[in-house]
Image (cartoon, rainbow, N blue to C red):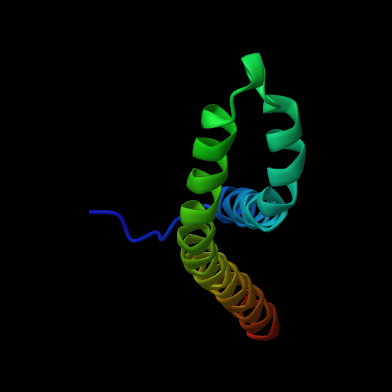
Length: 101
């Protein structure tokens, strides 16, 4: 059994940044609906594909917002844990230095 505690702060920082990027992607996703519908157009004069894409986007909007909120909560928790471990590490280092350790 080891008496060391290894906290992967670099991995936690990387996860924090990745979650922030994903949240931004979710926030920006809704703004791409109109360009998508325009790109689909009306092939052969029909709107079925465009209508289906529009319906999917509308249904996905609410789900995307819920998922985005959960991702924000997760990102904030990861950031909080990482910050707390960093502060603890600094406090322990300072305590050791003050006590001649």
